Image (tube, rainbow, N blue to C red; front, side, top):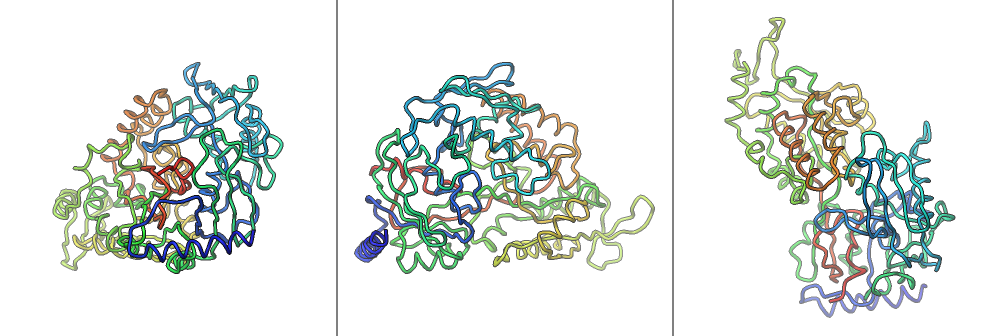
Length: 521
């Protein structure tokens, strides 16, 4: 194994030096990848603890359903499926002659055992760690095998819908190795050697059911910080890196590298407390939306490493309603008009808008902006200060308060805030109901709309992609009208590589080596 590292690293370095005046070349039979990893001490695909490791697992383990470049469900280990009983039952027919990397056949019993482990853990009372795939419990009431190649799923109450296909994307493990370290998978590669904090060596799975990949082996070198990952790339110790660091933006125009931008599932938002005066006024919420310029924030703070979105849905996909752009323009004068029509003016000429409340007391238009920050990254604080400047253009007074993640969680749960910058890790299933339905867990702003709640319930009855799309578009229209909160963008990252390894249009977070198994230039 050590010989492999010593042989491969100098070879990669020589290739890079020889190609220093050329564009990135197509990958050969091997690739060296740099990732950040300090927490992974055991290889347990159902319990990932680091996002970069999930892109490694993605090459080793497969799921019943895959999500294609258009973000639509496609056949994976399940070759077909059908619903019955108005979506209460979904039956998945598995492909035959699928084997794990140790040579044992995969059957419906392996699927059931894997799913049941996820469900049991997710439903465990008072569990401090329900597992990464715990959302499966919201979709699946029960799962069973009907023979060796048929899986029958009974859907959970209120989730008899097409969206369940997105939930069937968890990795399938052998039934007797669900909790084992480094269990066999059915994917294109298998993990041959793992040294925690050092490296992972992947080799081709000799039992893979598809065409043999061109790339025969992948070395994954682990680093202890984002800075170390970038330095490793700069000094040509690795061919490819994954990074969400804004410092990676400087590499986008390099002559020896390609930068593949990818969207993460992290949605950055400005939460609004609908119970707090004066944010209970639609006119004030609309005015704030007109004043905040996400494009300016993206360019000045995030160095363009974002994907803009005006709704919780993924832009550029079938689910995104792009007919609503007139709601989301930046327009300072429109904001002034709305506030004036809502009774706000600067009566004492102190530069801050004021208004008499229902008790006849004069109230200034003053808002608290709460923000928490990621370790070693102050972009969210910079964003809050920039938003404060934007609101100040029309006389909205603000105070930015920086908190710990724990403290801001407490503030959100108690609805003790005006505005808060917060991010949400959006689920694979395009269903924003948990953010928008009255009383739901992610509805921190106490937004209340019978129409929106009914629209979200309607979404969860749709059995076709066409019906599902229309429901999502209706939800976004209501979102645009009511301003439950403000979407800024999805965070993005970059895959920097000197060797092109994919033709996939949608290289995305958790699947950053997507397409390497089928790449044949």
